[in-house]
Length: 177
Image 1: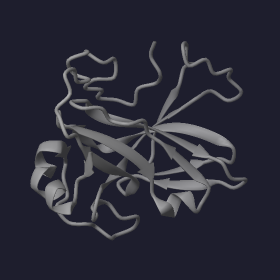
Image 2: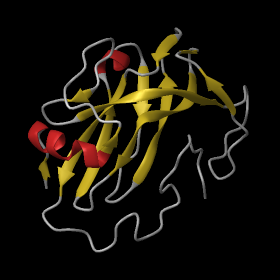
Image 3: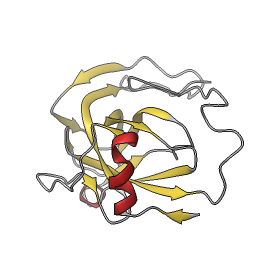
Image 4: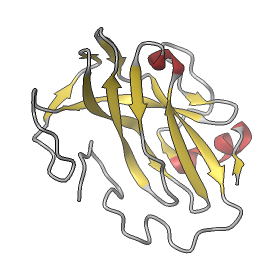
């Protein structure tokens, strides 16, 4: 399994991302293709869990939707966001996701599970403020890097074949069982 480079990302980007940037945009927190990955942007939609709620991932509490160009994430809290880009993963590819260093240095933990072959949708992003200070989250700017791993052989059953529960999600999607 090899990591896909910038030439592959630029060649296939319009099939994978909507919208797609063919060059790295360095305004604010950067986004677009890098040497071996693609930096996705954060949308302006957030789902905020109720304060003091007991959180059961099998039965998540009601969230409040917030639209903000700059979201202020309080200390020791978390919020769900989503990617600005709609993503379609090729069948012969697995995508690993990690947060950007600018936010990591602020105390933000960006958690995105791997994107399986033929998964598609807007990526739901868990954003955790592990610090003791408020962190500003900027919509329309970079939030995480996707790294594409090319398979030596195509899988027998993709996420789409299995009719995965998060397939083609259009909104921020809390946990489902």
